[in-house]
Length: 242
RNA sequence: GCUUUAUAGUUUCCGCG
Image (cartoon, rainbow, N blue to C red; front, side):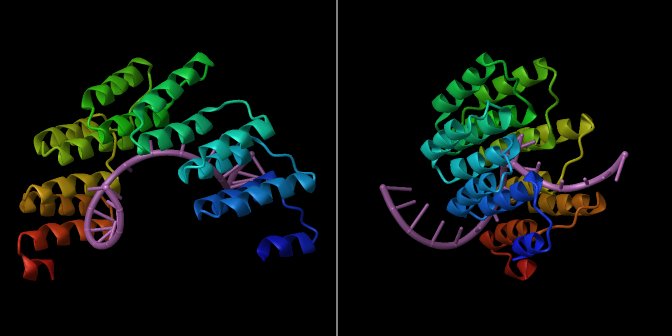
């Protein structure tokens, strides 16, 4: 409605306004609406740019419509970029298809596109998901060698891997390493390690981390509380959970 | 001059295998 009202008042949405709208539709899984708006904007004489096409490609990849994504790429003749590659690769990783992810990664490099922190991190998450920690670490090494700094997300993926492997001491090591490199753990990083503590029954450590995150200025979210409550309930600490 | 748009990570529950 607002979008229409804007037009009625003689303000023509530009490519950014359309893309904002299109991307939101994609994020709400309203893909066909997004695609039709994309075609509509060209009818209004607004040309698509790489951002608008990439956002639709990402939406299509997320719902598994890779073939549709490929045809959109062809129709709009979008030169390859790392966002689009990461969208495809993320889906391959989520599906555990690391062979496809690996192929796309190399295809991209051959086109002369350089992987960024996001892309390396995506690859690492895929390998962690299929429990191939060696390959995950291999990509971490490549990233560092290439002069790209790992992010909080990069390390959180490893923290999560070690937590889920019940190697809490390794998870702690990575968490500390992240801090020693000057990175500031965010809420997700704290929640991840906290879940590892909880699942291993280190409830005192979980509460210690809760204090730590509060003093670091993070407000616990619903996931934080779900995590703590679950770990207490599983061990019968009903009153503490209450 | 400023500002708005695209890619990665955490819990529970549920479904499927």
